[in-house]
Length: 118
Image 1 (spheres, rainbow, N blue to C red):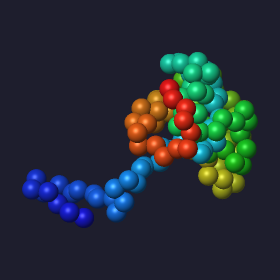
Image 2 (image 1 turned 180 degrees about the horizontal axis):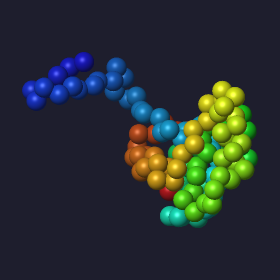
Image 3 (image 1 turned 45 degrees about the horizontal axis):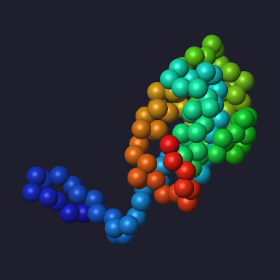
């Protein structure tokens, strides 16, 4: 690592054309509960732009379960995800606010073979 004159670390990629991969790229995502900030259709389009794969049900292949703010108690999808997590499956349960934060990550840092746009 190099240091600049302000004594803060500067990280240099070995390949200047290397791109960071968005957290949703090539990940399987399930929504549960109504989102408060957008429709399910809008959220689906945004996830697909970042290379995410939408699922209707939670399975061992699911990577993220997105919890909409407008839900009452735990949904069957959330319960299934928690059951699989307890069995050692790597599933992330993500509240809507965190989902929106991840969506806010710049698209230019995404490695994708898709030509889709927002």
